Length: 173
Ligand code: SF4
Image 1: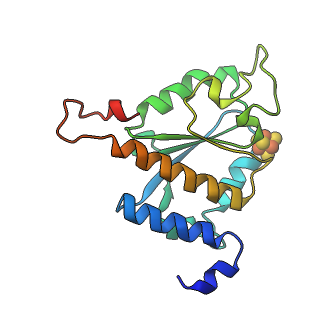
Image 2 (image 1 turned 45 degrees about the vertical axis):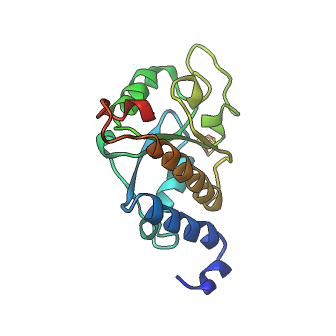
């Protein structure tokens, strides 16, 4: 990537992301998305990051349907109560260290108040590490949120000890 890349909006954040992932992990990171009752537009924005225009894969991110392969959980929607158990099981199936990213105003709790059908935010069910606002978040906001998430994941990974008695990484969650 050259200095010319920074002329494109969002590419500075993209360059920082790629450098940080390469320096801190030396491998790609995998994202599991979780729709907990969204209108699907936040999901679409996340998926568009993988299209050629933003080309999220060049930064070292890939989407996975398998929670056991995932480093990051990107949650959209207001967390309908019927989805709470499945959301928790998805999170628990991920290996540590892991990051939860609440994505969009619904997941942040800014659209639906809690009622008998909706928890009202992802944070009511999951331990959210990073919050990305917007309805939906812009691609640049998503990239910047992922940059924060990578930093947070690196902090958690730094707490891992491969000689400790905790091979599950539970202590680093
Ligand atoms: S934050 Fe907006 S775009 Fe995203 S799921 Fe909610 S209503 Fe849809």
